[in-house]
Length: 119
Image (cartoon, rainbow, N blue to C red):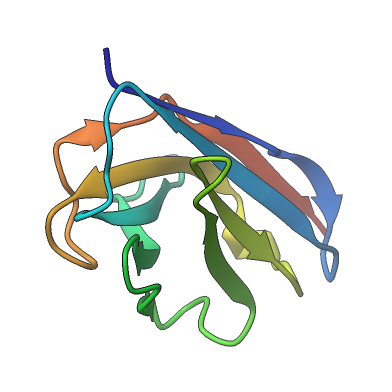
């Protein structure tokens, strides 16, 4: 059974940092791209960042570029999202995703982790 389990969300003040983790199990995603998406209340889902598992090529949404960094640890089968200089508008539920195309939502999703940034 494929599982993507997010962790690391929480409440942080504007300007602070958080690191999200996505633990992957159940199958290999070595040929896939792993991504993070987010959805705030009343808003559409937004692409945040993605990484090709095999090559480590990365891609970022314009609203987070320069502040967020995506990475992966092969040994731990885990993908990370380091979020720095957080803004109130970064508040959302963050979802881990796996799919065949970088930056495009694939079929595998985690349940999400809440990130709340206070002013």
